[in-house]
Length: 168
Image (tube, rainbow, N blue to C red; front, side):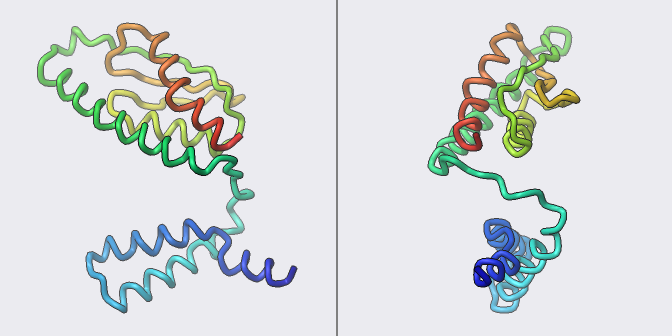
């Protein structure tokens, strides 16, 4: 039991530790022993120092679905970039059907809702604008949407369904 407590104190968020170390080395743009040591030190120190402000770790029920989710999001980002470029280059601003849509949420965990909001914002042409006070719906701005209901269905089927499998 004491080993578990020590491990959790030293590495309260192991994935974050690895990410911080990799980001540091990437930002330094130099793979040297000094940068690796500093990256590992930051990767250990930052999560340990900020652990008191973190809620309990999210429970990822189906980790293999995460890879599929990342693939879907990456594909949608590429496709959306092309669509937005086409809209900007070949359509007049007045012909865009810009609209706000409210997406009712089946997600209940804050981590899943945050991932959904981030995914929507990362996908060009859509932005998460607001989360309702009760956390049951998210307001999304769409650059061009001929059918707002189709946008809601797409968000729920492509993103929310997968996030529900991952987190809930």
